[in-house]
Length: 192
Image (cartoon, rainbow, N blue to C red):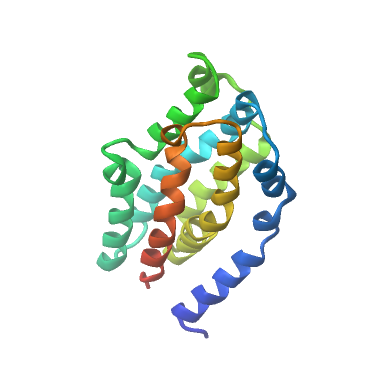
């Protein structure tokens, strides 16, 4: 059996080749100006995943007895809770972006918008993986498939958000993740 370090290196290479990182959507949004209302539709489907990312991590924390792994997950959770953003949790930063997409009603649409079945399935699958699967499976799903992938997924989104006219503070959720998720992914790679 391959050791954990080699497994994670191989997984990173698999993530880099995944079609999601090369999807035409990323090229399209980074090269064409979309309205803030169009970005709101994007945000309405992404919000459940953003909202549940902290519970995913909390489930991971409960799903291992390895104290080194718990410490690493706890440090990342502190950032998710807002330690890296002046006390603003990451879901709170995302909702700031949503409010910038529209009028005062934009935030309320997050609770009224019908969700695509794929959005529901993604959240349910991640909760199940983090709660029920072995800890290293959750590391693969949350660490490599998300934290590592953000370095490739979010820069085109940031470019598109800038084209749409969002101010830097309105898209802090995205810029912060570009800066921190490479570090988070590296931290999660240290778990065994």
